[in-house]
Length: 145
Length: 485
Image 1 (cartoon, chains in turn yellow, purple):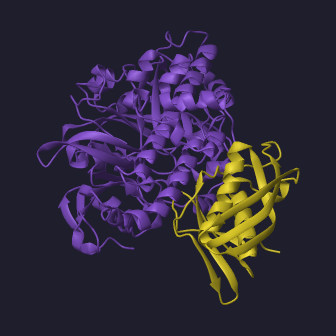
Image 2 (cartoon, rainbow over the protein chains, first blue to last red):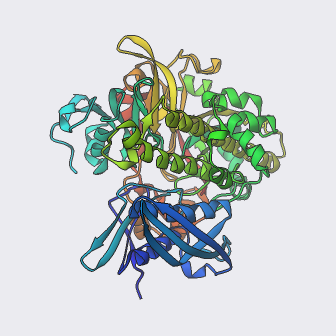
Image 3 (spheres, each protein chain N blue to C red):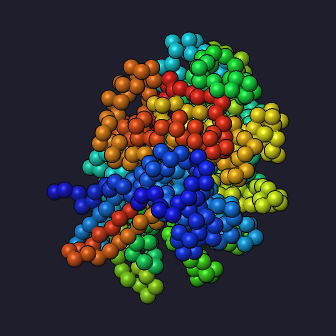
């Protein structure tokens, strides 16, 4: 199966842009999380499921919710040196926006086993979009590396 | 997007986009570039710099340097001076990597003396200055110590024994931006940064051993004043920033500004990455105090890295770093906002100057320069690609046309993905070695992304800054050893 994300050119000369897609917003968020991890490590399959972290975030809009999710992954990468994949992700509409619950699973960075790529500094608002398309959902994200 | 049709050529190296170009522009946009560089600018620069021109309180021009390229909110190479009483502060005008900057250190060694030990030097420096994804530094400190460090910057590091007192006077702002307040910084930012002092980072961050060949010394007198006096003298240059700490400070306040901007302050911007708040507002002042912590974290980071470099050279050559002449030339920041005094429209004024991928370049005699550089103007350290070389420049009197600012690097010309498709890291390392440049990298594909052709021609950029009267060439420095983050 090919990944439900792909890296884009011509959006951010010095950084990394990707698009992610799937039938539901949850699928797009999971794909975007993998794309972010894949920016830092060449084979995301080399990240073993040893550590668990609960993710619970909220935002006014879906695109900002995605921003918050990816920022959580960037945070854990520096604060705990954890590379994480996301699963069991649920998005709920609330009165004022959206809430997301998910589980993040991964392990401490091990340069011996993880072929490391670029260190993601931040998730940007540049061209950030989460949108419904005719056949599902689609997102574009630019990462500052 | 091609060069806008309404752009006006002001001089050989300056171009202006009038306020009529876009609704909401308060000042014209000015781009410093040769015709060739201008034509090669990527799509986003013109749109982004004219967006910057709409920010409340901007004075003069929204400027872009010759190494400009697409950024977030501001283009890289962007410069905006705001009236601090009526204008805004925008994290997008500083960048996520707050106080990303360059430091240059001398040695009294020549290329001939260093060459037999080059590999050892590069390998040991790579071991002592951690680089790459999630790298932790060698300085162990508590969260409270870290808060103290980010309020004091390089001063904290020197006090702890990482470096020499004279390093401070040879650092922009003497290594400490006053008014940093760690209580304005989130726990998350501290979590991300407190173990990262002394680390290089990744992407375009690097540490390079370079040589100043006699034919590349353009102004021997100024080069001498900067400490470059020997034929084939070896120097060490490095490029890094405030690491996860600064990135989190920027991320946190972008969120704060996005929430406050429209509802509370009624400010509309054409791009969310230009989120901003009035400089004098509580949000603006909180960010300014937090941003200063990140500026100082970066000064402390580069101070510790300098110390590690001195340790390695000292071990390898069996001499004290002082006997190896390892004085710092200067440390410049290229991602900041600072309150500075400039003569604007004939009157001295306090301005909030945002520089994003742009370097302060004070001319001779300006306050803020150490006595040793009062006559020469400020040393400006401009990093090129790891293949083509870098420059040591000097600030000039005519720099007032851009609030004494010049370029910061050669500027990317090719996307990272495109570079990775075209080059292979291991192959590139071999090719570079054949050309006399020994490279160590934390990431092979990261190395491929930094291949020389991925950047604009550094000579063109530097020559444009000289012709535009922003800075002048002193020495071109060629790489011989590189640690890539």
